[in-house]
Each structure stands twice: as C-alpha cells, then as structure tokens.
Amino acid sequence: MIVYGLNPVIEALRAGRVRRLKVGPRGDKRTDEAVALAKTSGIQIERVDAQVLERLSRGGVHQGIAAEVEAPRDYSVQELVDGAAPHPPLLVVVDGVEDPHNVGAIVRSVDAAGGHGVIRQERHAASLDGIAAKASAGALAVVKIATVVNIARALEELKNAGVWTVGFAGEGGEDYDVVDFTLPTAIVVGGEGDGLRRLTKDRCDRLVKIPMGGAVDSLNVSVAAGVALFEAARQRRVKTR
Image: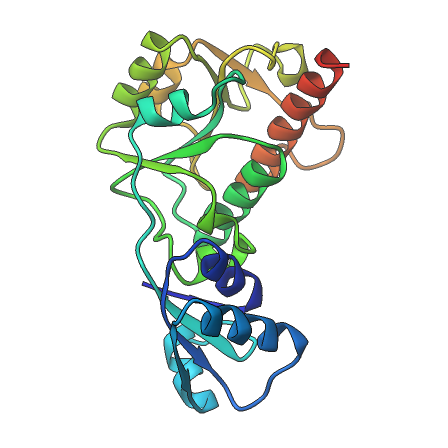
C-alpha cells in the first residue's frame, strides 16, 4: 500500500513498515529526516519527479514524499482488549464510516487520547492507505486496527470481554458525559449519512447524544468521536490523580 505526506511516511519509517521510499526533487529538513531514517534502516530510496508522486498520491497533498509500506497488521477484537492492559480498554467502533478523511481523523484522535484501537467492518469502510493515512498524521502506523466481518457480532464479543458499548446517536436518551468512561469502554459511531445502523444500535449497552447548542443538529462523525475520546481521557486522568 502507498502512504504519502511527511507525517505518515516518517511514522511508517519509525514503525518499520516502509519497503521503499520515493522522494521528489524538492525537500526540506523533514524530508532529510525521512531520508536519514530510511538510510539507517537500509530501505531503498528512489528519487522521482513530481508527476510520479502526483500519480501515487492520486492528486493528494504528498509534500514531495511517498512510500510503499507493508499493510498494517490486522488484530482481533480480543487482542485489542488484551493489549490495553493494565489499563481498562478504550476503543472506537466505526460502523459504516466510508470517508477516508473521517477514518484517518478518528484514528488520529484515538492515538492522541490514549485509546487502544479501532474496530471497523470489512465492507462499506474506507481504505486505510492514501487519504486515510494522510488524515491520520501518521497515527495509522501505530494505532491497532481490527477489521471484522460483522459489527453487531463484534459488539457481542466486546460485551463478553467485559467492555461496555456506548453508541452515539442523535436520539440517545442521555448526554454522553454522564457515562463512566473509566470503565472498559467501546465508543460506537456511525456512518456519515445515516449514523448507526439499527442492528448496531440494538447491540449497544446504551445510546447517548452530544447536546447541540446551535442551529445544526449533529457533528461530523470524526469530531463526535474526538469529543467522546477526550471526555474519556479527561475522566481517566482525573481518576488517577
């Protein structure tokens, strides 16, 4: 798979996932940093013209650099739960989020808030390369991802593992900040258009909403996930003081 842009490429280099680095004719200090990392690891470096980078990035903002990388390891739901130890798991389940910008932004928020992974469905989900990798600002190189066939079944697996599933929906019966996020928690968010699917809602332990104080009645899914994650991070930080 291809990632492009300085942050995604540098993080992929640090994670040891890059097979080949492609560098354009122009560079700066951060480009030099990426090249130095590649040389240290014995990674092949190829100098290419801007047209090659445009083609690889499909017109995205490549910042003069791209890399061929190994596909990220796919974890199981149980591995995400177990990997959180000794902390209570904090996961995000994305139900039908197809915009790669949103997927990348959610993964970035998971990393920034100290979350332990993302669960996504195999079908009707954005690819994890290209735009998603760029939007994640490198977080896709470090955040654990579990790709499942069925979200509803994954929610049942989480419950069996002792993880509370909290769905975010406009019709939620209570505000999101009444939830005790210091418990093992999976934040469940839905697709850009219709939100959570009915079967997903039915499987959640509780449905909550983010109260809106303006003219619009909802938030972008990646923003909503970020709000939830940082409320969880706040609660957990307060508890440890």
